[in-house]
Length: 89
Image 1 (cartoon, rainbow, N blue to C red):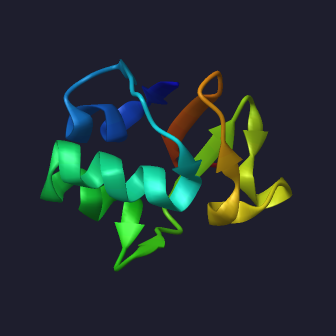
Image 2 (tube, one colour):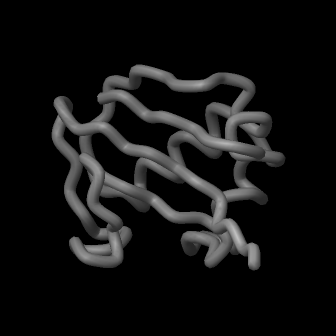
């Protein structure tokens, strides 16, 4: 599956995108990526073992809020995008 990182999340991962061999849920993917990319990445995307409210995660262009949240099951062909929440005026 392809995982894309945006803005400061990209800086935390050190890559723009990655292709990973993974099956499981979004929550499990975030834990896997946190182990791969380290504590800075973990702090950016997780609050404890929960998804941080400072990130937006899309699976094939759909926000996981409108799917099954962190329990959304991923397929090898999926594309996951991880964005920081952006505020502005």
